[in-house]
Length: 283
Image 1 (cartoon, rainbow, N blue to C red):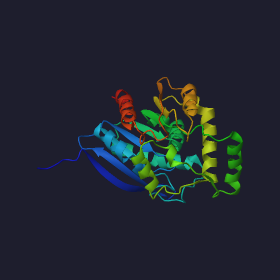
Image 2: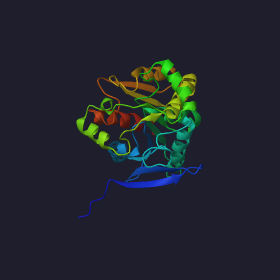
Image 3: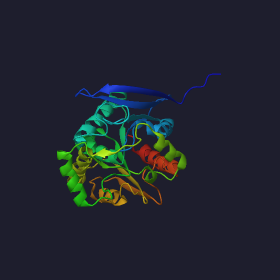
Image 4: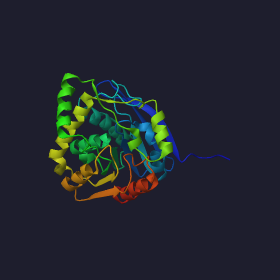
């Protein structure tokens, strides 16, 4: 008896125009895709951590891509360092362009988590017309650090770009002990700290978003856990208020931690994402 896999799994690299090799994974449904979902991870993460959600999305009929941003996971580049959000946006754009070339007729939905939400939302500002919708999860727009500290880091980013300034606590990511154990054991993120240059790039990126949220007009789903200590739900609420989209939904999950797709109750969150995407698939 032959068992047919419900999807085809692929790992590959694409070469960014600046020569950086960007690693990505994709999951293509065997029965044909009805839309594309591209996942952009955040700090202390990489595309491989999204295998579970990606398989579920593929089972729901989506061709899923998850990239490793430069300097993270299996992509090239100095570890965890980036000078500008524009570099991450360019990585994301390269993968989205590849996805569109493979499924030219399909709508593309972008899912950005945490710092990946900053990257995804910036992509939506610059290339929003290429997307059918944006899912922004645990958005790293507001973080539990005083403005004065963030301003100081912006200065340090220029003077001491490699200086470690931010270490996230993995225990704040999930209440699921198995998921936490997996995260703590992940060799690609173990002992990860964010250098001043990278945090400064995020602060500048968020400054731009704060000024330009109103220009975002595509369908928008914004998700956040109320007990997220890594990024503040208030940031997602601010985005929901300021976005120029006529079709925008904010959903807060009571008691959930930072990584909604690796936390207890992740199945319900994933189902909410699927239920939001399906009626918005371009016909």
